[in-house]
Length: 549
Image (cartoon, rainbow, N blue to C red):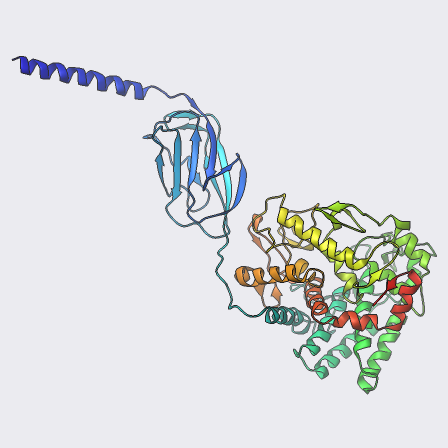
């Protein structure tokens, strides 16, 4: 009897204890706060972002007090996208840490967001929502077979050349503005394209006879196209030769675009053989075109500065002066070099150099910038004027231009390595900010206006200044990102991983600089041709440049 009474007493006590425990658990936990979230051990602030995360990350949510581990609502603790609540989870022994791992592998180089929603969950009231963003790491497998660096450079040049050869306008032979431009051709980009075709001949992509035939088509079109005191407009209809307005008031001459074309024409003239009748005729036609540019007209009646535009209908309405420092140094060099309408040195010093105000001299990322905007501006400043103009031994009162372009490039690169915006992929493998297409349309990208857009032309066209650093980018883009950024005419114009945007466009002004500047690195071809022109030597001397070999 005592035995059975003992059993009853023990059972009653046990039930009493169990009931008490259930009552304790059933009590509302009250308010709970998410203290922090870590992803693969890295703490992420609320609405913060980290990069280079694995495809099956471990995410931990730290609460300020224990939660009810049996009452998890996975619809309010979730991943963005297809994963959503398809994950495994467990809690720490003290019920204060939730550990989550997706059940499926995440996609490479993709943005995900993990969110703990505010409100009722885990038997509590979560008083603060918390969200952490992360980019998964790159799929680092090679997308193409490994080849030598020299072969990569040739391949890149060949593809860029094809933009100006295969995709040139069939009537005019000029370069289309972009790969969707139809009949719209671009004057500056065509100047770059002329130089790319010279490279195509020298690299064996086409025969000399094929190149001369194309040059003849181009020059004949330019002779008959609309001109404005000898200058060309920015855009043309490639069939009719009539100017195509770049904007409402920009329907006439564009001195900067004209200079980019003339740079190409002079380079071509120096390449041609005067002892060949067809090539000799081209030389004469090019001289007629170059000598017809009325550079002095664009001083607007004798001012000590050159103006960018003139319109036959609205005159100087745009009223944009060409002042340094930017991409337009070549305008003043060519204007001073003219044998028919030369500017005086004062136009250069007062207009372009602003009586010395173009100098900078400050240090950025430990690198001194001789002239220009803080941090140097977009990298096309170091490209457009220097496709023919050789900066290797070029200096004046304001800068050593080799040092300027090298340092400008290094500053741009270092900005991407430091990566203050914490953009994915930015590194010594992936750098280069310049003007290009972007996820918002088109923009000028530089350290002070960095939205995460990498433009392959920036680093590749800087190859003369940073050969090893630029080749590192070429290898990375080709091997590691080739499935996303490589196409018919080489590297696409730009991409922004942070916006999940991968451009598929090509622009003449970006493909042209790639072909030409890689060649200037490899052989100095276009530099040597352009600098051999006697009028260029004379013009540089007038402006006070030193060219010491």
